[in-house]
Image (cartoon, rainbow, N blue to C red; front, side):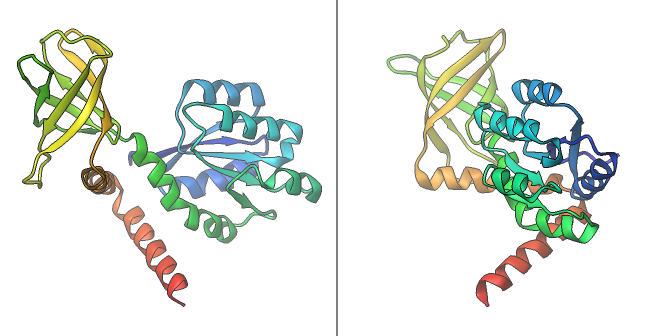
Length: 250
């Protein structure tokens, strides 16, 4: 079974719509988590992270409440949002501005694909924002007026890393971290803060990177994320990128 590269919350009570949108998402290696009622969808928004949220405007007032909850959710406010147009054009018009993209009814495989194509890069970018890549590299934790702590990373993301160490550090302590990623000769150095500690492990949040190294880390993580994409999805994504470049150059 292919591992999904991203997760979407699909809120709709229409079985045909769920099937059409769900199949299109799965074709791009996006796993749809389906909710047919507002309370269940809001519960999920409060306890899980989604890369995209798709809301059927046929749900009427409930659809607006779900879209509002997305923007209020600390973990999902940057998710890529889609609305599925209602048969009532006034409803669609009122709620269109609350979503980034709109699937227009009547739905077809072609129209759904046409809406997903320009959004796919944004969904992958959202996934990359909190994507944690498992990697074991030597890490040096730099403490003011204290000996350096030598340890190894467990995983790394744009915002920080988890490391293995039995040296006791306090949550909230400001430190520096130095590490070298595979394929890079120069070490990365970041002002950081200890954000959590457990026996044998601790979490480090990056507070300040140079712009150059921040971009390099993003690029490195992007490559690792793309390596996880199934080949057929990679081909589709590359085709989408080429099409976008052609449109921009015309």
